[in-house]
Image (cartoon, rainbow, N blue to C red; front, side, top):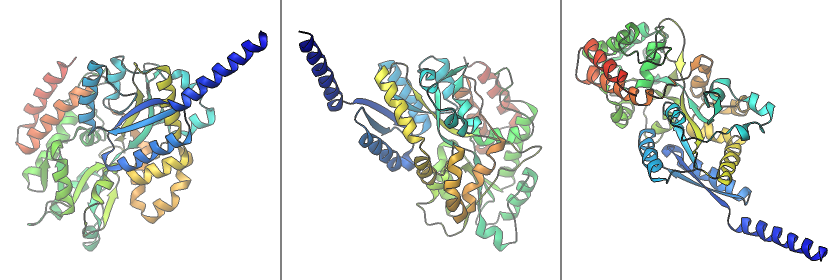
Length: 404
């Protein structure tokens, strides 16, 4: 009888294993990597082939803004994915709203040497109010893209300070092209405020949109537009801004280092240069990118699958491929030596990493996801509509304080 029970138990175990192999846990992954979607698909396929417990279904769901709207709707309809690529400005709101899974149980099993291999800024960003809700994957900093051929032909260098930038912008402006593309983007604008010693958000989390430093930065940009040295663009006109740059209608532009691949498909008739962000008082940049999060309603098996997939993405060889595909800053120190030849081939590629030591997180208050939209609307009115800077920012401040 005992032997029969043992045999039955063995048979049941074997059947369960066989069933698990036939029906791996599906892990749906929503991401915003349209420019690198083939690489993401390849990672998912390779991970799926490497084991039989989980199947990752990678789905590109639009820009960060579009994906955020889609996620909010999915949460209401109980159709949210397992893994979501949360832009770091949106991440605090998701954590505050209580819709993310705490990953501390998985984190404690991570080898200490691996944890120490991550750059602290990106690793610590995933912690919100003492809990691990986010995991690093893609990180970036804003850089100054410029027409290196034009500057070299005229014996000019990229600017180190914003004062030098203003002078260069006017010098490069002629009847066929402007010196700069001024985009109403909160991320780029944050750097201009930070380097002046200010911040768009106060230490207590309250919006700070009409502070001295914010007013100065906005006035600086508006002056360049009014002087005819800059093309104003809204954030929704990002594609037009790229065309302005590659068609030499403007000779400098600020964007994420991850926008480099967006330029590559075009036939660019000049050498593309990239320089660190200009400064006023100190070298400082807000890092961007996203954190991978797991939604709270995911089953234990789905959470385990998400963790396993993230570990696969974090393999040094996969991070090398990821950096080459998206030009992101490597999130692990051990990856850098593996990229030496690639950086040596084109030193401009390393600019974002070289200023990463001066990178700080974007505002981590839950309200900032909505407040930054208000700031961008004000910047658009200032740059494209010529609205009085103080009036526009005072109104933005009032609206931002009403956000809850």
